[in-house]
Image 1 (tube, rainbow, N blue to C red):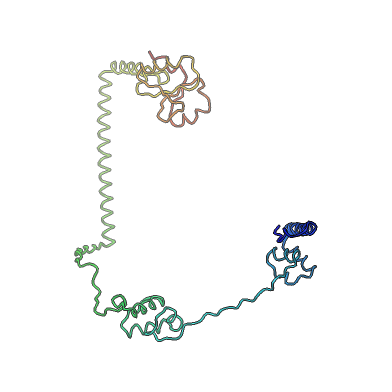
Image 2 (cartoon, rainbow, N blue to C red):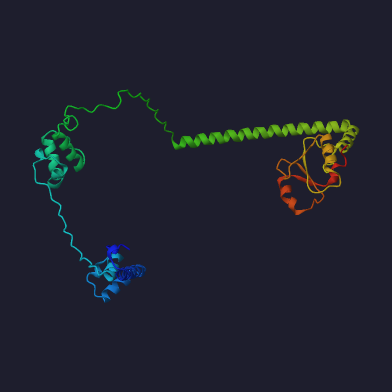
Length: 309
C-alpha cells in the first residue's frame, strides 16, 4: 500500500491508515471503469478547476480521490522560421540563401555572365552555383568549343529511283478489255464445237457397237446387276471403322472377330467420334442418333453382318 512509517505506528492508527488507503484504491478502481465524459461531469459537480481541459482519466481520478490539482493548459509559443540573411550570389554558401532571395531568371543571368551552364530547374541551377563556389569547374562550366558531332559517319546507300508510272488512257484500257473478252468468247465457241463433234462421233461409235453385238451387251448388263452389292448387307467391311452402341444379341467378342476377319476395325471408345463410319445398334430409329446421321455416319442393326463370313 506504500504506507510510510508503519513500524512506529500504533495498531489503531495503522488500522485507520490501511482502511483509508483501501477506500482510495477501491474508489479509483470504480472511477477507472467510467468513461472520460462521465468523470468530467463528476468533477464539474465537485467544482474541480481545469477539469474540462483534462485529456485522460488519471488526473480526474486523482483530483477526486486524493484532492490533486489539475494543471491549467499552457499555451505553446510558436517559433517563427527565420529567413537567411541576404547575401550576394558569389558569396552564398547554403541552398536557402539563394532559394529565398533570388528568382530563377536572376540565377540564370548570373550563370551566363560567369560562363556556367544555364539549363535545368531552379534547384539544379542553385546546386550548380554552389558546386562552382566549391571549386568544381569541370562539371559546371559551359564549353563553347564543343561541337555537336553526327551520330553516325556511315554513308547511306543510294536508293535507286523508282521507274515512272506508265500512263494508259481510258480508251486504251477499254480496247484491251474488249480484245480479251473477244478472245475468250472465240476460245469457248471453238471448245464447244470440238465437244459437239466428239460427242457425235462417240454416239455413232456406240450405235455401231450396239448394232454389231446386241447379245454381248445384254450379257454384260446381267453381270453388272449380279455384281452390285447391297450396301445395307455388305460382304466386306474393309477400311470401315464400326462402333457398337447398346446391347446386341451377339457378343461383342464375336462381332469384333467377324469385323476384323472381313477387313474392318471395331471402335473401342465409349463415345462415338467423327472418324466412325458405321454405328450398329438395336434401336436404329432412336432420335439420339439424328446428329450422327447428319454428320454422314450410317446407323444400322445387326442384320448388317448377315452376309459376312
